[in-house]
Length: 249
Image (cartoon, one colour):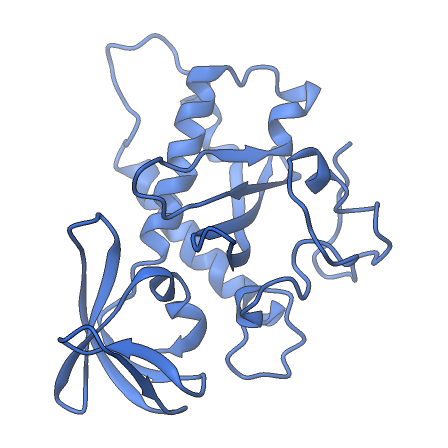
């Protein structure tokens, strides 16, 4: 059962209500308040923060995240990422514009030391939830799990449709995590960056860094290249995926 909710209203906090579909997806939340509340080891990773800590990605930032993700979605669509004139009519391409309001609900470092990304999105006006587990596993590409695949109204989603939807959302998220070049302020005390020797260096809250680019290492993991006090540093591994939560442009 898919339950609607208005994002401008409070979510019912009774376990087993709005977010009980996570159980059907094999997700094991430890909080009775659903997937967006207080579950991440790094609390900044949820859009449902109460805002008490300035580096947290609070619910008030949701519209900004949606705008950024929407720009990526529109770019991928306009580039015709899945267009092939030799193919038979494609149901996914016919419905691609109906996928809207993609949100990153939570970014979480799991027990495998990989990143799980919980999302929500609208399809024909209905809100659905999903998760990419081990999103940054370079050996086995993450596959989307979502309640949309169990909805009887979405029987058109066959294996080919799934692969395209899975890849579409994956590319959107992948591009969203890439930071723009420029100056950023550190919002978290003792944030970690690496020097050219690979040593962890802590930087203080409100320190200014200059992002000069990003790249992929030999293990196919993305990393950020920056300058701090005229020295070159990087932000690597899972810290890469928390950058937009911990730094403000």
